[in-house]
Image (cartoon, rainbow, N blue to C red; front, side):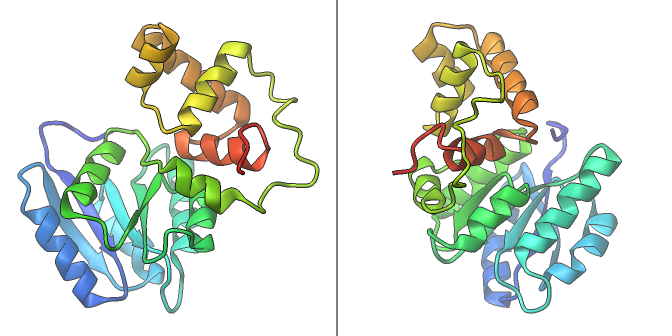
Length: 223
């Protein structure tokens, strides 16, 4: 989670200079956000992260040498070893892009379409910087179709309690902690505890990966 007294530091990764320029204009127009660097290929991401220490990386999916999936996976693995690192939002042209689903599996905290409105881009950066995830349940459900393993057991071996299962289903529906608390008549802190338990039992890094697992396991139908 970023320091609320300092602007959120954003790294732009895209092989199209026009896209990077547009994103820089959008982000740098906000007092609480700042673009600290930009690169044109995933191969340059490790050095850029080491040099600029961003809080959030806007990562293109398709790039010439190292794509956004591999770059995201390497960043997440490095962050886990180091005990912290930037969070990733993948940016794509197509909503049903298989690359996006693979990037989410690799540890991205959400995705955005390149045609997203400026306010959607800004909101996504702020949400991810707070340690939350950018989820589009309908799009994730479409991407998950055909990804369910033939041996999927609906998470029967995960040991989720009935309440944790309810929380996971609402997470998969895109509900925030506050919305889950309202629907289940629980306190927000209680919901946070349940979410933490779900992540631990599923062995995943964040809400996005938990939702992906919920769909691919058949716990939440992808149809």
